[in-house]
Amino acid sequence: MMIGKILLKLSVALICFWCVDAKAQSANTISQDLPFHFSIDAERSSYQPGDLSYLGSRVGAGPIRFGLVTEDDRLDVSGINLGLVYQLPSYQIQTQIGYGFGDDQQSFGTIDLGGPTLIVPGTGIGSSGIGFGFPGPTNEITNGVLRRDFRQQNFEIAIEKTPYILSDKVSLAPALGFKYNRTETDNFFGGDLPSAGADSFFYNTEMSVQSFSPIAKLSLDYLLHPKIKLNASAYYAYDFNIGDGTDQLTLIGSIAAGTQRADLDNNDSTHSYGFRAGAQIPLQKNLDLSLDLFYDAIGNTPELDLRTGSNVSAFDYERTSQYGGRIGFTLKF
Image (cartoon, rainbow, N blue to C red; front, side, top):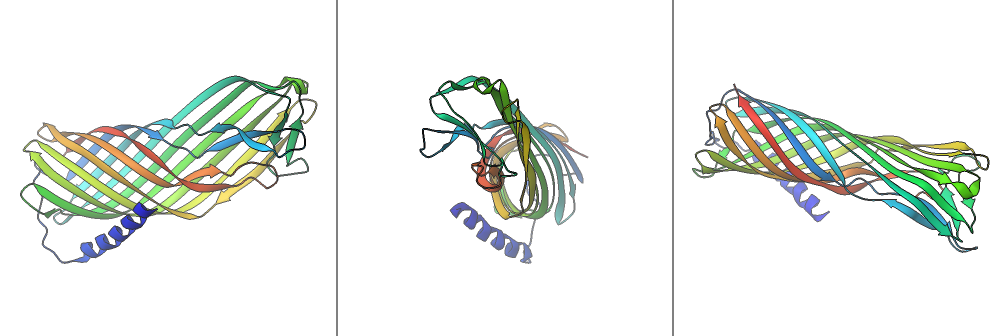
């Protein structure tokens, strides 16, 4: 939260800095600047989705302990980005589209509760929305499976001022822009209940978030060598979110067959920020190689509230992280 406030203040200062009628010069470059720069890069990252918890247990008439199974592991995400820059005398127009995806599946075999009652919380919808209890003493779940799917699409456009020359090797460039991002998650958890007469159950939770974000960026370049340029940047984005989805519980069998489905929505606004650091190395006259590391603090990660069945299922936004690396190529023409 403190870092977010600092970056927000820096963003305001950046806007003021943008408006100052200062003399800007072109920065030293490792190859001759041409009007168009087309880039393509591939990335691999570690992403923290929102936590999800399932099931509960109860001993006698005591309180219910929810979160018997929790899904909170990080997810490996792969992505590809395409960018196009148009260079003008006093500024450049930057555009980028990106796509990322990741999935995993875990089979945990059997969960044996022994004596306690197994609680399968509902979605809070309908007469059975509070859920179901399956008492012991031979109370177990077999063939349990957890599965997650993650998809992300984004588009960004920004205008960057011609860099301000701080020294013969160092330049600073502010940018203002707009970003559209769509994140979709699909979470599945299910298993069999042999002690309940060969019943089975599964949860399927889908959440989608579209964000419309004004963004402020600041980039710093350092000419380490005539053929190697180091760069670092930071950004701040204020996210106007439109979030929706469904939380569904399905039971199959003779004891408690049926489907419960709760609609989800959350349009709260959030903010995000991130940092980049890397190097640019020429391969040929108008072809450069880029290597980057990045860290993002994402403020609009959807996270389902603890499912107890007492209230209708709902989700909130949590701040999580994504970090990784990129390798890419830029063609100037």
